[in-house]
Length: 195
Image (cartoon, rainbow, N blue to C red):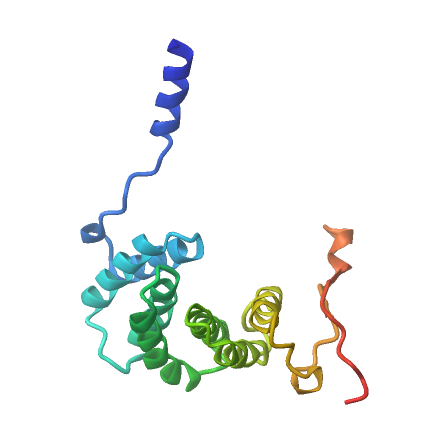
């Protein structure tokens, strides 16, 4: 019994304390919120994005407000606040698209968020459209995540015509001397060559 209590006490001691937003700068709040959202802790991330927006006094339509809107919007969708999340993603995407080369990952992830929101409303055509737009951004979202979402959106109504999809035959990692396995291909569906 004592051993179990000692193990439990050790486990609780290793839990990180909650972040006190009052002690963080706007950038630290944004970075912590982004880390939380990527770790699937969207409820915490939403609170931190709110604090970052308030602390930075981001003007609507500014780049910082757009980044917060898109990332927070994805978390809002993930936590079931679909309308609010899609509104925020849609508000932020046009601003990020003005600097598409710099924000292609955020744009693609925002499109994934819109696709996920459409899936929750059983709007499979809208979801497929958003996922295909995300897939068309080179260097954007993780293509495996996009193909997985696209497969779910197409499971019963058929897949989109492969000839209309962005051409991706395979993705190769650059070999590195440290890891001889790094040159193995990441499995991707091959696209037909007779479109």
